[in-house]
Length: 250
Image (cartoon, rainbow, N blue to C red):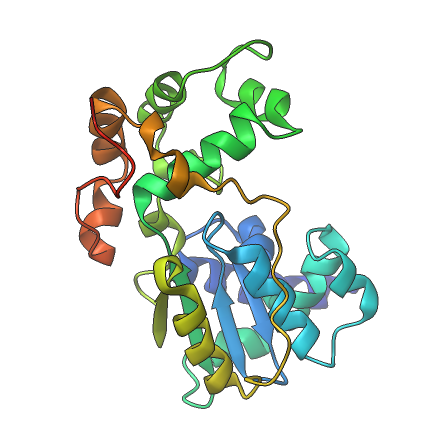
């Protein structure tokens, strides 16, 4: 790539990053750009993202089989994100012919799912524990995890536990915000809008934690921490600060 080409890419990448309210290097993991289907998915980890991405890239004939097999590699993300065509993506952010959407999840369930997957049961828990200064071995309590998060600025948080209000752009047009709590219905609306209603839905269970059935892990202390850390999520996306069925806040 020539110097001029790199400068042009830098210009568009910077403009997109400002619109997404993120660092330029984050664009890779924050977007899925469906040029043929005329869609943009603003990624939100721990909110059915793997199932959404897997379904979309399999429905778009423009992506190769390697991307379909593993969309989490850097090579794959370069092909499916805004990075594939920065100039066109910037235009598509406001183009009436494109459909822009995201999905959100109850903050209590989302952060508990993250804790279980990344810090308690997951195969990479030692790496994630090191990242926020928790002991690599032995049991780690949810309250310990949340106490560490309370001292972090949202913009510096790992995307898996970053508040959704800091991940989903507030200054960019979003046509539809689906909810994980009614996923089949809401994702059905997305598939209809993108013209892929008949495409097979690829359910990814690799990181499933069944967090909603483990809400008893959230006691009074944990709830208070979540309310403070994720207060903007409750306000912006209309979730009540009431624990879902299964948690007793004791």
